[in-house]
Length: 426
Ligand SMILES: *[C@@H]1O[C@H](CO)[C@@H](O)[C@H](O)[C@H]1NC(C)=O
Ligand SMILES: *[C@@H]1O[C@H](CO)[C@@H](O)[C@H](O)[C@H]1NC(C)=O
Ligand SMILES: *[C@@H]1O[C@H](CO)[C@@H](O)[C@H](O)[C@H]1NC(C)=O
Ligand SMILES: *[C@@H]1O[C@H](CO)[C@@H](O)[C@H](O)[C@H]1NC(C)=O
Ligand SMILES: *[C@@H]1O[C@H](CO)[C@@H](O)[C@H](O)[C@H]1NC(C)=O
Image 1 (cartoon, rainbow, N blue to C red):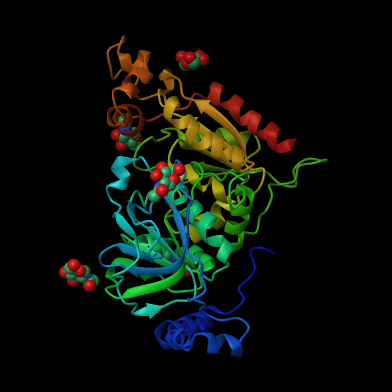
Image 2: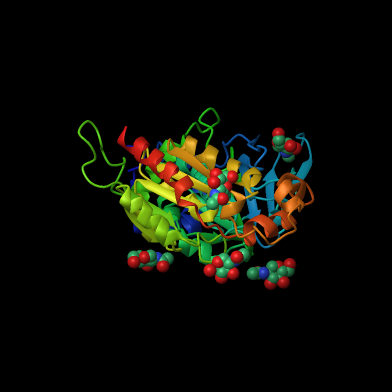
């Protein structure tokens, strides 16, 4: 119900916006109260809107919801808010990307100035009756995990409440990111995206959110506003990408109707499972229907592909983010490279649980790792990965994540596969 409300067709909305944006509204504005007596629902009640600023920031992002007289000058990355003369004079800066505190990623995000001032506001070039959301596609956009944790989930949390009647003002625009997620962006906003820094005109709004709400890594806290859950988010994805399977294969009470389908996520840059084909055969012999494949970048295709499986197995990495497309009760097996436990555990274990997926992890032992024999027998790399981690993430990443392949030991891994089968069947 919540997810199927396209009240007007997209083309109608666009036309309406163009008309409203470029003239009609200005006239309404000039006509003021006259307009309101004609219609019960003024398109633009500029004069009446009370000014308010809500700070929606969390430990993961900075976000501000503003109502009142808001004037956005994209080219100078400035947002002016008209305050009453007796109001407090204040200004602050913000970066509208949900990875607060990550200085490296945030370097690629432009700083916006929010100026709350009583006078000397720039004149409006265009008035908009619909609210706007300002967010950046800088940061780590393009990495599949970050796309979801820093952008898509926060965007869902921030924009869903508007049911499409919201304008996206994108800063630090990356065209490839926008084309990658176009289907999804069009589900959240009925209007064409505006590349905000290119705007030398002053765009005026009565309501805007600067930045995106964010709760936690690859997750949603239902106790926090707007009180959505990951189940609702996943339902939104299924509706957006027309995914057929809501739930995994039914195996009760008389056994599975067909062989449970298992996807082994193949990686082609690093962290290879060198014997992935043998692992696949082992899983087949235990009753799974197995496909070994690297997930691509076309989200519509990947979403449908992943949704067709009951089980996803993969070495820690961004590809596991695609678990968002698994049907309810799907099983995820994260293979954790030797020494990478510290890092790998929080990243997919908690999100999988939030998504109501069943989650297992398989810790690669040193004798299954390409690290064996690479360092002196008593090297700290083998003895104490956490000590390496403390020395810095770059070094840690280079030792355990960029330069390690795994060769799974069948006797050990078989136990995990049997556990998966047991979970699926009960
Ligand atoms: C908004 O809230 C955050 C977190 O509570 C705080 O750190 C920040 O200073 C606030 N920003 C402004 C402009 O008040
Ligand atoms: C933005 O402003 C700068 C000067 O402040 C100017 O050089 C540049 O051409 C402007 N960009 C656009 C797209 O208007
Ligand atoms: C993704 O694949 C679908 C189906 O093959 C295609 O229609 C669509 O254009 C592709 N999207 C992108 C962004 O390449
Ligand atoms: C590899 O290490 C694991 C865990 O330490 C152990 O159970 C297993 O027997 C070892 N396998 C071989 C072939 O040494
Ligand atoms: C991992 O395996 C791939 C493919 O066989 C190989 O190209 C790469 O060099 C290996 N990397 C390590 C660190 O062993």
